[in-house]
Image 1: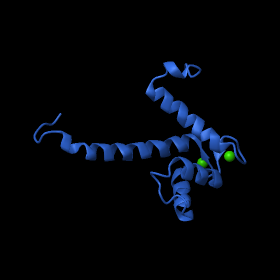
Image 2: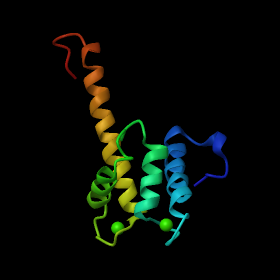
Image 3: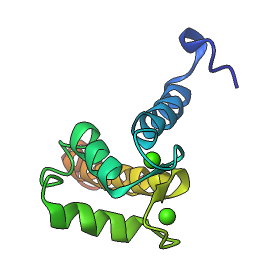
Length: 111
Ligand SMILES: [Ca+2]
Ligand SMILES: [Ca+2]
């Protein structure tokens, strides 16, 4: 990887790097440096995904996200589980994008 040289990175490479940096920005606050505790997850959701998860301040919402994400039930969100969250949200955004641009195609023009 050429992550030392951001100017030469593609958008997707930058996005991957940002995901890694964002995860570690919050995962290092308490407990295990490489996993998100409930509090760290809440902080991350509030700061980074406020636009997508408007009610992340709601304790139940954080609890629900945590329960959904914590595939191995250890009470922490590791990087793999985090990537699944971001992936799922990205899929949801893409669905919205496709829906939004549906009318860009003339009727009957299908690929
Ligand atoms: Ca942690
Ligand atoms: Ca876990």
